Image 1 (tube, protein in one colour):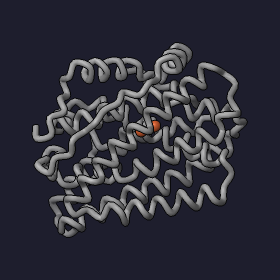
Image 2 (cartoon, rainbow, N blue to C red):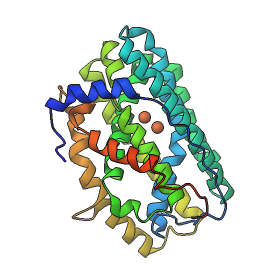
Image 3 (cartoon, rainbow, N blue to C red):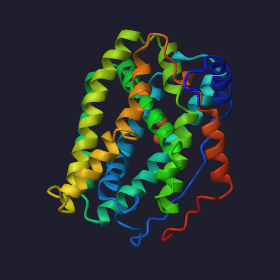
Image 4 (cartoon, rainbow, N blue to C red):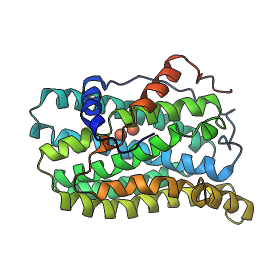
Length: 291
Ligand SMILES: [Fe+2]
Ligand SMILES: [Fe+2]
């Protein structure tokens, strides 16, 4: 897929702004679900679990940031997109609260890890102006968009997930792509600068990496896996493998953010959205908790 198709930007943004709507999904979290649900691999499963632990607090913050500056926009289409964004992130938050409760029942230190994130968000909200909350949201939405793009482009990975987890992650990834430019477009309307966007990205990249690492280490430690070379071998291959390592695949898309002319729809994800939507609607990713 051509990641840089400028002619599609306008069409994509328009499609997106007209069609963002939450798809309410409720997930049952059975304790019978496999612990190492991602291909039987502890590192990869806990990597995704580590992300899930970040979502409820993070997505609540995104909603607050967008609400705080919604008044800066007078465009009815963007306002409708903001409504869709808030609806989608609200449902994601609910789904990941259920996911994280399930992790807590498995003995994972979810409350402590969420507390760390919550404390940083409170600090940001107490000490920084709303335009900086929105800048951080723009940066984190870029991360979620490029990770969603990657997830939906990896049928080999999706095939290794039980339908319950596959449905949750495909549903979330699909909606992240649909609403990927909403915070960015509002940031532009609110006169957010390029300099602030880039400076914020450097800080967000550091914190986001640290947060994932911190959660991942805590989850592996809970399972007594920190000292297992096999787990780390698999993790290094997953993240840094020479051909298909996640970091190398994400890096070019991550770096696009630093262009002054960057817009989230520079990457045309419409085909991915369409095919994920089709799969979701066709019920191919069934929800059965023990499947
Ligand atoms: Fe989300
Ligand atoms: Fe999002």
